[in-house]
Image 1 (spheres, rainbow, N blue to C red):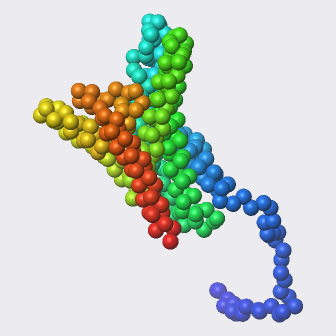
Image 2: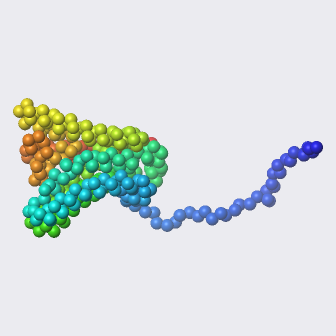
Image 3: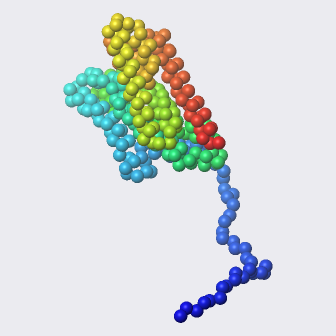
Length: 305
């Protein structure tokens, strides 16, 4: 038979029984590294993340695979050039990124959302801004990291081609000049593509939506511009071809390098912009890149509130 137990009443300790325990928390009196250090750390972490470094093995597969896909054709061209003792590479330095644009667009589509969408989805952006870092620091670090990752992706195969051309004993001065022109071209491409990719990815916290949107903008814009240029050529309106090229990121880069960097235009009929039109292309690339930076800054000012 159960015995009913009397209820126990809580006993309030008297004042002389209370204790304050020192559990070891101490204030930080070391050096304050400030915004510059935070910006460099965020840049380094974002750049490493663009190739899956410091993340799971699954995260490394796609960026490393795309990097290999970019470099393998360059290595094959070098092998053929060395074996045949050719005097020129089968593909020019400025032309290489245009040919491999699908791979570059896929890389931007996969890594731009990875760079910013997770921060938006898990609402960690206000935590960044609760420290000494400011909106401009965050945007600069993310922008520079993705642009640097793209420059590595597009510049590495050019380096392979350059080293191969020297091994094949092609003209040193000529190859060095073309290699430098190719580097300038992919540097502009990296800035432009990074800006566009980040702006699109920052619109939605859903990574899948960001990937689809970036691919759509890159691929559809190029397809539409190429179609309109082909129609203009058929209609004997060759003068309109360079102006139509202003409406796609990859044709913008193609126009700049065909006008000033010794490249051959990929437009129908090889009709590239004149020097005057090329100046418009340069202004369009720089203006669009600056506009993307401004949009990112405005977006994150609202997010950080």
